[in-house]
Length: 406
Image 1 (tube, rainbow, N blue to C red):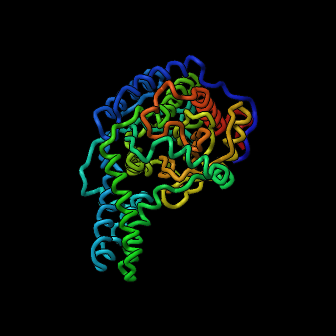
Image 2: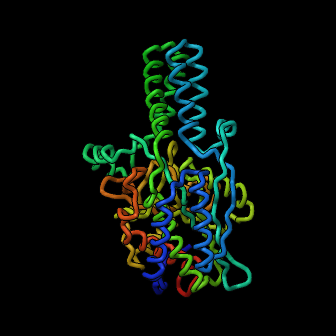
Image 3: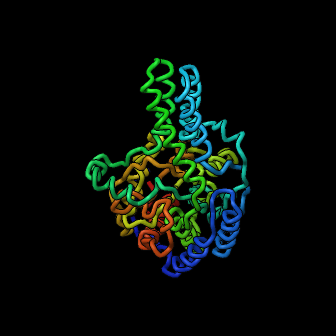
């Protein structure tokens, strides 16, 4: 790919964005944890709205476990109990618990989830076919319509304190700390303490594991948030984009618009999408663009992310999108690394060129992250509009509009 240049494409109109914002406000009234009745209702509404905008859509039911707090909480709770016992139990159970948490955070095989209760979540997939009879490439632009549960660990005071204490360091490093590392390190310390006969290490691991187990229990009994920024802001951009693309379809690029229904359970719905659709998507001719929490004041591209290991996004795509943003008048801060999880990880790990548009506020986090104040009136709508413009610019560039593809 070469860098972007050429004329600025027609962006989604203010009317497109106003219509999409109306849908966002409706969706925010629904409680939408993964695999819930509200999540299903949101998926069905979103499919109808995409259809009405000229993007034929289907709702795809999928089986998911639907939480992260249960598998993480069970593993950490078992490690905490084992750490308070003898060496043999600590070594064995701590090792299994640490491996289970690591596998879950790395979106691995996740055997524990398979024996836990399953739910039906719903992905929404719309397709916009090009005007040419045979598409040359496919672009999958995706968001998610489910909503997270809150919890004490998401209290905004924590982000404010981190910014006051280490905000300068976070900015210089270009990434946030990794809050989920302790969920693996606690059980690992229990195991190491048991193997080496180090009682203090074992008990320290048990204490850390108990803290994570308590946090997971708190999340389990907390209510879902409205999820306007995370991630109805991206759904709004997706709807506005659908209307713009239906008005002026790409010439050679097939565009899939996807909204997943169980992202907040550590990307389960995107994993299911991959199981169902990656076989029909050629890695050499398919690109993924993830839209995640784009309603904060500062839009940015993710340089990397990951709850455990850091997954880096291709610099080539970052450069292209950065150039398109500059050309389209969309302000972006410098690329940043989140130690969180977005659906972009799944295609990236599968070998597809992938990029993520996200946003942050002055506390180096998505505004109102997993907190009850994540409501439509708190959105920075200029960022949502900028996301829609940038996504369309990327579509036109990939489509090879005159002067925009090398």
